[in-house]
Image (cartoon, rainbow, N blue to C red; front, side, top):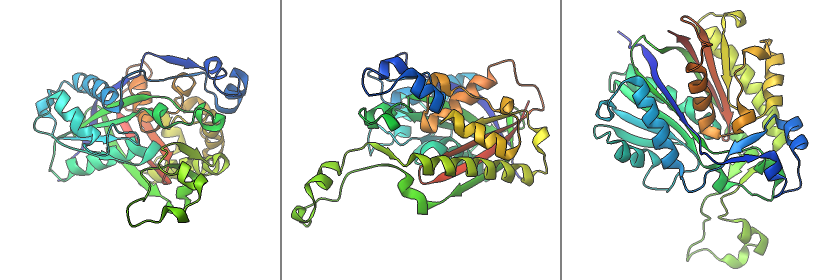
Length: 334
């Protein structure tokens, strides 16, 4: 018999340091009005001293406590991130050691802003197969270390933070009813962050222009804003329709939608396309900005710990990100 998978604990952690739009105006040619009207963002958290594994550990600890589990009861840790402390070891292994989750396997997953969705779907499959019972999924980012702080088109958008969920073989909590994952690698250049360049003793660097050499290996986020906007609106709509159709639900059956927190205009446009009132979209990007893989986990924890959810409520988590990737998870709350 197929196992039921539910979210039994949530957690979030944000750095204490707040950077407002006015603070940013001291770094680049921008203003509070310019940022707010184009993105909906008022402020974001920027880490001072805490790396991705630190944020992930804090969020994971809170999620474990909320789930009522001891670290040794976790079978697997998945950390979704594009800003790990190291290429190796994985962020998940560092978190595993700090938590004392001695029985857990651990690995990182890279799906950019869709990371939490991809991580949850991966965890669901491990649990449904019977291999594991309890899986900790963390979305964590310190995007501040990969931002070009002179590029106002990107540096105003992002923030640091971590969100986490514990999934288990249970009908309790937020039970997963349907999921959907998509990718379109042909649009990979819409949103990028470079890694280490291919330069070794066999490469003739004289064949590489000076400007190209300067850019190679600089891990900075680059974005084709209009292309990402169009992709985001379309894929939010497509993924919402996909999970609703899998369980024969209608728009009116949904209590809340937690979208990836990237841009207020994207969410508003998707709301119009899917014909679901904007009031049903849970939005907190005004306080945190775009925290990539962390955003959905942070928002879910806020919603779960509010007084807004009732037993039986249907909630959809929907994300999009670099790759390009997208996906959705439909939950029934109890």
